Every structure is written in C-alpha cells, then in structure tokens.
Length: 70
Ligand SMILES: [Zn+2]
Image (cartoon, rainbow, N blue to C red; front, top):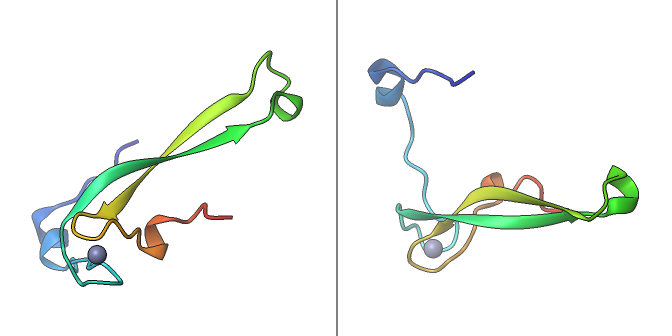
C-alpha cells in the first residue's frame, strides 16, 4: 500500500543534501544485486534492481539511500 504524504507532512520535511558536496538534487539510479540460482532454486540467477538516489552534481550516493550496501 502506498504511503500518503500530506501537505502538512511536506511542511515538516527536511531537504536532503549530498553528504559530499551539499547539492540538493538527485538522479534516480539503480544498483543491481544478483541472487544465485543455487539459493533461489530457479533455473537462472535472479537479478534484483534496487532504486536509489545519486547526487546530480558529483554522483555520490548518500549512505541512507544505500541501505543494502553489504
Ligand atoms: Zn554531491
């Protein structure tokens, strides 16, 4: 279910900045994880795209966007 964001919530939101250059605009980018077919039991490896945001200026991805960075 999609989370409803109201105008009131937006007023209480904070602007995110790039950790490196403090730029405030981001591009949506994808990281791709591959899960071995030995784990999933499928016929081939599974490709899982993980959307996150990269700084439009320097390309840096803030740590909070990159939660699956293991
Ligand atoms: Zn940046």
